[in-house]
Image 1 (tube, rainbow, N blue to C red):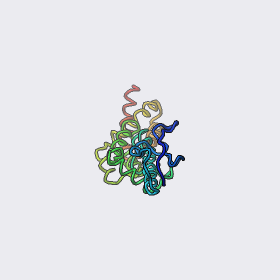
Image 2: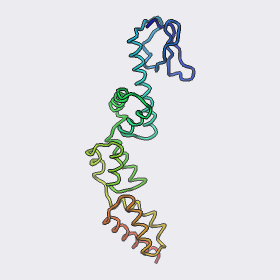
Image 3: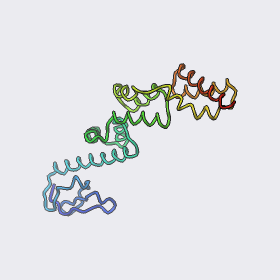
Image 4: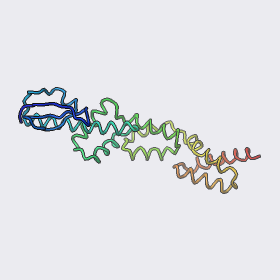
Length: 209
């Protein structure tokens, strides 16, 4: 390949290093990948290829990290994101392995996070949550563990209370129909919907007295 004649930081991205071989620009590398290179060092074609392969892994890792910094992601979500960026499968596999090793990707923690967020901000049924997690590539055993302690009635009531307050002045049939339809769209079953609707209608009547 030739001898390294210059190593310079890129102006637009100072975390990347331009490598010049025999006086000509050869390729750019992430700073961590270029850390052991020295001016005057001779590189073979195979060594240069290995460096560029390692750099591609670093690039993909940075893309993945930016993706999961926005909010926690499942392993499958991150894999799909990197595939959309057209990284090779072997590069993606290495990136996922590295991020799992340092717990930046953890499907068990992600499943708990997802359930907690839904219960707090947008309650829905256990079945609906399980379906969401399956769509995110979470294993069934992990899903079952994350949703094991869910209280369907409490979740349905929490979801329904703001709507019930808004509709409390409606006639009974319309109140029940609107609230029941809302809860069904959130995935709650008939028994839970009926029980929550009954309870909230009774409370609405007590407030209206």
